[in-house]
Length: 120
Image (cartoon, rainbow, N blue to C red; front, side, top):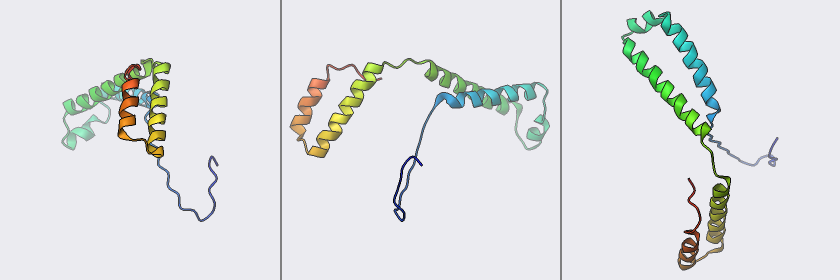
């Protein structure tokens, strides 16, 4: 186990993540859909239930747009220094709020931080 928790201790964890790794799954499904759609395989089932062909095409195009967006995010280069500076800035603000820093002191620190590079 990654974390040891004493017995009888109530605990709850939620992990939410967004990753470009899902792009491969979308690409595989898109490829399979294209192959089946070219042969009109199973299309009659959808049409009999009231769906139109253009609705399938719209869904396919939406999926391709999603794949393109994930590819763009995957290709994006993140400036490591900017991320580190933003992380440090957040850590200092969190520490100050725990220590009870006044608003005046926070404004002064924000003015000093304006010279930092913006974080994406």
